[in-house]
Amino acid sequence: MAKDDKDIKDDRKPGKGDKGRTREREKDRKPSKSAGKRIDRAMDLAEERIGLIEESETVAERLANAAKSSELLSAVWSMPPAQRLMFHHGVDVADLAAHGAGETPGFEGDKYDAERFIDLSASGIARYQRLMYANGVKGSNRRLLIVLQGMDASGKGGIVRHVFRQGDPMGIHYHGFGKPTEEEASHGFLWRVERELPDPGWIAVFDRSHYEDIVMPHVYGTFPEDVWRARYDLVNEFERSLAADGCAIIKIFLVSSREEQRRHFLARLDDPTKYWKFDVSDLDARDRWDDYMAAWQEVFERTSTPAAPWYLVPADNRWYSRAVVSELLRTAMRNMNMTWPPLEANVDPSAARRRLGGA
Image (cartoon, rainbow, N blue to C red; front, side, top):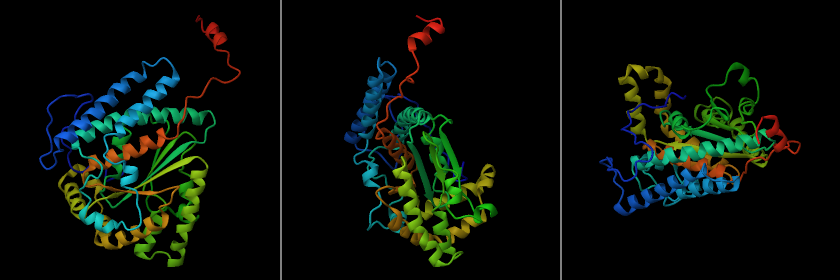
């Protein structure tokens, strides 16, 4: 996991299926009574529908119940994150970091609601993951790439652990990109990225990515400007080709505030078990916060495309950013409209049952 995995102790997390129980709401965030009822109702219905999936008699019924449970979960949001948080020209990431990183756009619940949502959503993610993997085994080119970016201590590592809490390791590939090795630097900047792309049926999660090879030289001048600027077009073509070949791409920038980053850095210094997460270079990057914001702003303006849009996710409330990523991921796979692969044409199920001693 990335070193920004978890620095500040979370409150008690609720169990699954705690319907009707009295909540311990966060003091600084209480949803309105009507919003709370709406969210509870949507998740209660989603949980009931999830329970029907395994009881379904046919594959079609299972898929329909899975899709319906996912739709009910999406009803928790007053506006879908895919619409509300997609970057569009006019959005200023520096302003969002300064004034909006602690907001929860589209989600009117509290941490309790978000944790329950993530738990229910994780079951759907695991189900769609298995479905995509099965199709990949049988020749489908469907796959998914998640790009996680953000300033240090923005919560990239924790996203992976929470969103995929019910996922199957078989079918998920996680890779963190750091400074290029000598071998990597001897190739084109996309070479090391191409080696980590998801196989058919797989999900790949990038903690940092090829965008570091644009932002870092932009901020520090390690390459001539004409070199790193030329990479915008290369990246756009690279991602267009991936999308055309069946790879869905979700690009997420976790927008944290400087004050929240400061709290996490101090937490690392206060806890000996987190010393390993702290590096002086993190402070060097913090000193150039404005330069990083300007560099990322240009990245969003140049590389947020219909094939691979950017989502700018407020991340000071990590329960919110994790819920957003969970929603984006689950709906992306649901929208692939996959079904379970049939038996091979040369398989006679009756003959196979006889050989197995069945009816």
